[in-house]
Image (cartoon, rainbow, N blue to C red; front, side, top):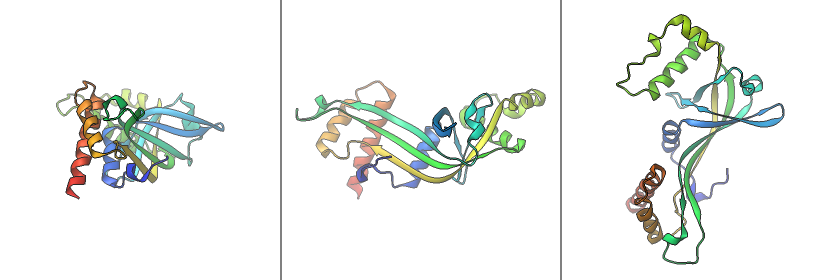
Length: 207
């Protein structure tokens, strides 16, 4: 990924947070000599060393993915930035966004307990604390049958790179103009980008 130095995520914790908060990823590999992608949730383990996920068995991507170096992309908030918000007409449109790329090697899960553990962690992550749904409460025979329909895997993380493009290459005045416009938008992405931009400016003031 092309990352100008002022957009590079250098804080490892921030990269991990993006992965955890935006865990519905796009996983790219080579299948039959061609690029292939699947959109699926990937869960970062507690040691931040592996990503866990599972394919539907009819999905051919898993059949030749073992030991491949793959790319998982985690898309954070993103939004359009209009040049009409600036103090000059000598400007062009752009896009602000947050993204993290993870590279690693795939291992297929052969142990049913490891697969069940990864599914349990996924349910815990996405179910609200007040939810009455518990994977351990599901009929064991039914769950075993459902598990036969998926192929679990884990990705040993080799490298993480992240990009947070928040108009850092523009003046502070212009960044504040953009924040003001984004805060007036109803969309969640615009609100999140405005919040991140304000936090970035605050961090610059502290340094």
